[in-house]
Length: 161
Image (cartoon, rainbow, N blue to C red):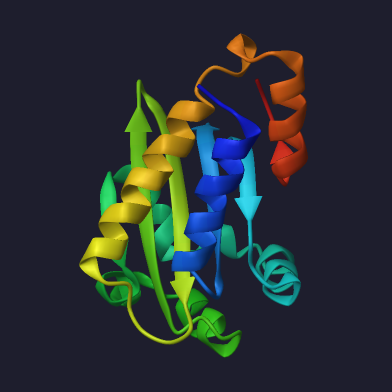
């Protein structure tokens, strides 16, 4: 069950594991997430959005068709538009993507570090944390109004219910 404290704690721990930022899209329907959490530098978010990089991002493409975790290095050969190179220019030296499906609802996250690749134990923890976020937000209609409002306030965007 959702509580703003458990959501804050989960996102806080993700932030500790991802010092250069993350983006988490929960419960994607078609191509739109119900909730989106971003903790990237605003210059990168603007560049990514202005250049519609989501359409070309090999991490996003992989995550929309697979489950599990992958490192950038595993997907660089699929990056014909240079999304990974652009991200590195913005200080994202290492990244992973994790995709999770809960009851047919897909959630994914991109997680970055400026200093070193994520360790296997960190990837396992991020996988658990993403699954926890997906579970906490699976049924927004079952949440009391105060909790829905708190969730919406923490989310970048609430796109559908």
